[in-house]
Length: 479
Picture 1 (cartoon, rainbow, N blue to C red):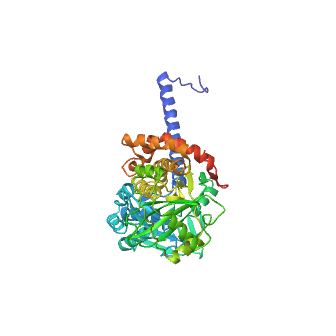
Picture 2 (picture 1 turned 60 degrees about the vertical axis):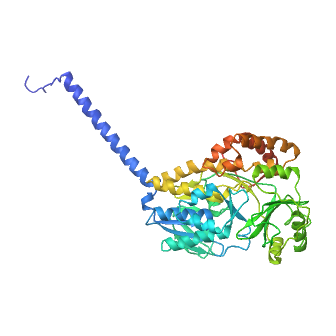
Picture 3 (picture 1 turned 135 degrees about the vertical axis):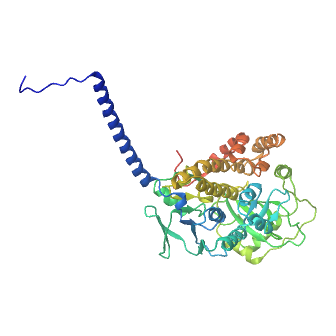
């Protein structure tokens, strides 16, 4: 009919084709939106790639930070590292008095740095059991720094006497107390158990901590060569009416006395007011004696208790006696964090990430192991944020396990005859089945596995620990 619009009738196949085309257009639009959103999120949240890692700032020139610097420099040929250390190059007067027991676990980590283990071996003293070599902290740090300067001097700068005063996590800039600003792609906090970096991360809401103190104080005393009174590799327990501790070798032929006491309100063990009191107390504590519990512990831990009917004369250095009396006592920490990284640009290492008692001698080993894990994570993952997440995922469980293992100190030394009746059989049972705690720590076995093997001993030790621990008011329990 003229003047009327024509009506076109489409077949069913035409309707289906139109619907398919509409669906395809919608899917393409959704994919484009998702791709755009993912790209924007990637650029804003994942941070730098590990290949673009150019500026690394390490706070703390202790063993953990220096080992990590070695590992990163040898695997990344373009990275530049700035290490900030608030102490002088020669260390503090106390730093070399208390050293590390370097065993198989330490050695396996250090052997990843060519030539380093040979240097450490040359400046350390063996223990009677042969499973450990003892080296002073300052001595170890000096060897690490010397090799860093020899091999990577143009790419690693270590500055001394300047403390970190501010961290701008948004700008990724560290400010030194002299006003200098240091930009970073990666910030590594290796500044000890009282870490400034860790506290800044906690304030930023990125990390939770569980932090307690052991109810003891400690100091260490350097002793000179005893001129045949003790063999150079002697390891002796110290027992006095107001303190306990141990004497162990210090390279090349001297000794260190490590002393613990429970009077938390005293700067020195009870009865020690001056250098003469200290010398008399140490001399008395080192006179030959061996009781049944000392012999039992000697058998279990592989140390050597010397016994004789003759009294021995102990040699002292007057300046070291004075340093001990006037120095500030240390504390033993129990520290766990829920993760070791924050914001995809900050990582924690060593005592800043985990605090543990000293009885098992695994603090440095765990620190070296974490440094190796961090370096391998950066090498494995192309994205910096992902690499740091991988580091936390692998390092945190191991650190938690060895921190719990060190609680056996409460069962071994803070208990009584009844706790010994529980602890000694548990240790002997594992020794008989070839899983003795002190030996397993130096074998190529994870801390998590060793914890499972000693779960009953650790469970019992935790009961004692919960009764005696001292919480830090600033700490919040890990969820």
